[in-house]
Each structure stands twice: as C-alpha cells, then as structure tokens.
Length: 475
Ligand code: BG6
Image 1 (cartoon, rainbow, N blue to C red):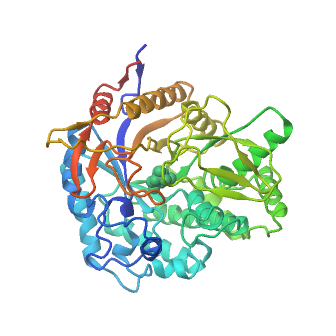
Image 2: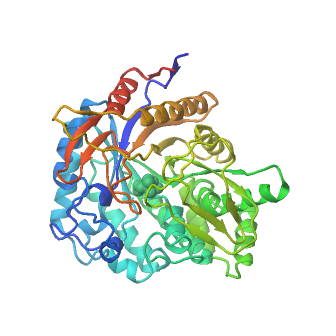
C-alpha cells in the first residue's frame, strides 16, 4: 500500500554546531564546556569533526541534490560571544553564520536555527551553567542579538533537549560536569531552561520579526514493563522525570498538579529538595506557551520501565557493545525491554509505534501547540568505507532505510490520526561526532571519511531524495 505525506511536508536534515563544525580554536571561538573535558578524557577530539566550518557549502550542495529542503543547524554561542556574555563580540563568528545562511539561500534550503545545542560557553558553565541566573540573562542577551543580526533566519529554536542536558549533567553523569544522582539539580536546571526559553520566545514576539520560534524536546515514549500497578506507577515517574516537566512548562505554560506531585515523589525518595520557581516566572511560561509557533520532537527509541527500589545505577553504552547499558533509578524505576524488542548496537530500541504515540500525545494533551516537526530521528550504525573506494562509491545502509521506512509509516499514521506534523529532519545530515560515543556511531545520509573529511553518498540518501520528491512511501 502507498502511504502519503502531506504536499507541503518539509524534508530536512539535522546537525549541531559542535558536532559538525570542528575549528574549535579558529577565528576567536571561545571555549565551551566540552573542550577541556574531552581533552582530559582522551577518547576522541571534537576537531575537525565533519569540518563543516569549511565544508558547509559542499554539504549544502549535496543536500540540495538529494532532496533535503531544510537543515537544522545551531549557532555556536561562543563563536559570537567567546565568553558567553555580550562584553566581547567576535565579528569573524558573526561573519561565518552570515555566509552559512547565504549558502542555504543559494541552495534553496531553509535553515532552522537552534540557539543552544549542548554547548554552553565555558565561562558560564563554570559558574553553574543552567543553574546560574547569569547564564539565563546572558542567553537572553545572546538570543536577542542573533534575532537582530540574522533577519534571514525565519525559524528559530530556543534550546535543544533541555532535559537531556539536565539529566546527563546531573543524574547519569555523561555530560560535563559529570555529576550523578542529583535529581534536584536536574529538575532545577530543567525549570530554569523552561524560563530561559519562555523569556526568549516572549522577546522574539515583541520584536515582531515575522518568523517562527519553537523548542526541541527529546521525547522517549515510556511504557510500563507489565500491567502491574507498581510498573505502571514507575512508568509515570520516569515520564515525569524525562518528559513532563518541560512538556508542561513549554507547551502548556504551567505544571499540572500531577506533574508536580510525581516530581516531588522522586525528590522525596532521594531526600532532595523541590526545585524553586517564582510567580513571575510562571507568568512568563504561560505567556510563551500561548505564543509558541511549533514544537520539535526528537524521537529515536522508547523505554519500558519496571518498579525498582534499590540504589541508583547507570551505565552508559558509549562503545556500541550491545547489551551493556544499565539504568536503574532510585525512586523512579528500572529500564527493562520486553522480549522481542529489536535494539541497535547502542541498546536503543527500534519501536516506530513510540513515534506515533508521542506525536499523538502532543496532539491530545497539549492543544495550545500549533504545529509539530520531527526535529531528530534516525539510526546510529557502525559503517566503514570499503578499502577499494573511489569517488563514486555509494555506502550501502539497508538498516537505515528499513528504520526510516518504518518510522515514516508511523509519522504518516499520526498525521492521519490528526497530528499536525509539518516536517521531518533526519539525524543526521552528514556523519558527525557524537558527544558520548565519538565517531563510530554514524547517522548521516552522507558518509564522512573522518581522517580526510571527504564525503560519500549513502544509499539512504537516494531513498530520502525519492521520498522528498514524491512524498510517497512505498511499503
Ligand atoms: C540527540 C541530540 O539527543 O541525539 C544530538 O540532540 C545527538 O546532539 C543525537 O547526537 C544522537 O545521540 P547520540 O548519543 O547517539 O549521539
């Protein structure tokens, strides 16, 4: 059976500045939280990544050729303001993004631009990152500067995945500063990001620039491992921990009493204090939720949660050794996949129904949201260049095509069920560096040979082009 995407559905590719640009020490760029941290770890370097700083025009030309109509890029805050604060401006950074957006125009590609994608300037990270009021004020100043400086951008994204950042910084410890089990800090950082997001949306709307503004969330659909009341409650707690605080905060403009009581239950179980919010902040959240233009959904996998009352224990699979990840959170629950759920080498479940269910949840539970984009989805695979490769070698990636076909079918189902999904951005446009997995987890439509940064096309790019041109998904 032939499934169809709406006529005006946008087909895009996604990236993030730190994961593609490289050039971390070029043209006056300030340090970010990752630079020294990665150097100390010694596992991999963010340079030269995909060398997008120099190769953007080549990637945009390829994108145009393979049916990519829009790209998600982020601005590296510390290229513009090396210290994060507006006291020092770096004109070479500003110039770079003007050139990037001009190249988008030349190649008929719409830029969707994220202001913060996990790359807090080091100086602001050192004083508390999202827990510091100075960070919030500086972020608003930087955002307003970008709105004025880059009128060519018509789609803005405030923050990429507030919760991933908060959880990985303070609970699982996989992002700098690498803290574990500080649920209180994670919730406070999430609330603070909701506030920063709201201030920026409200400022943008006051400036009347005629574009659109949204936020991007990591949304894992959470299911109970079994029908037992204990597992069902554990799944609710996990959902509150990962999804609800920022869904409520950014899409409804208020925290429901159920969300608050679930968050409190998690914190009480861990003997940690509730996050603080003020009446003024809640008014800002409410105002922003009523002016938001779209939400971006990043969905790759789903989770199943089982009741658990032991100590917290998390192990990150950062190498692609299947079956090595562990997540057991005290006061929440344990991740456990039911039999028969397919997974990637990094233990991410392949479960397209989760995409359908999360899109429907936004439609059903957050009626203020005018439009949804899938802003990230894709599969990380171990891929290599054949030793006899020539310039025309095409990388065969049948697993990616199969994954995409299934997830697109789920998106079309959701659209047919009433979800207003306006576009899709594959993660990722080109192979890039992954924060906690380095270079071996490849997601791109375009293969990057990391020692040389030369591009090769994957078969999935041909598949993507066809879908982009016909909007028809073959079974
Ligand atoms: C999203 C992020 O969470 O997932 C990206 O926005 C990230 O920056 C992507 O790279 C895939 O995750 P990972 O850990 O496989 O790189």
